[in-house]
Image (cartoon, rainbow, N blue to C red; front, side, top):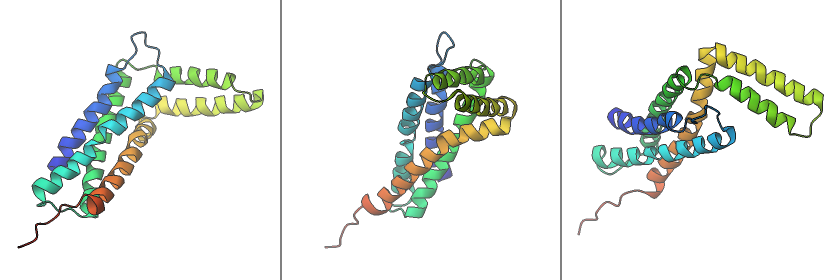
Length: 179
């Protein structure tokens, strides 16, 4: 099970983590709206590796039968491996070519808030809260790693849950009946 999780989690992690470098804008200015959508679509597509990992484990290691618990466990291990690679990729990206992410994000938030029909006081409160969060993000590696981890892990958790349900209850292999 561990080998399967490492292989499929590695594939999912390399796809999601590689996108930081592939999609880096040539002018260095991040399109936050497009990047967010593209990032989550990439995560969902890459984490379909969970389905293939569970199928592989069921067919090759468990003689075609898998319980909900085992399927969910495989899915969570794949998710964990992919999430760790995703976080490591983000940290590498941030330390190399994406170093001004927090500043660009802060500018984006200020622009977005300026376009909303809110009171100046409310806008200022939100800007201050975001600025405080971005300071922690820049200066506290554990905080940044935690935030990055929770971008991807819940998606993998949900896909693992649906995959486990599918394999435990819907995609059971029929055992041949003796004649």
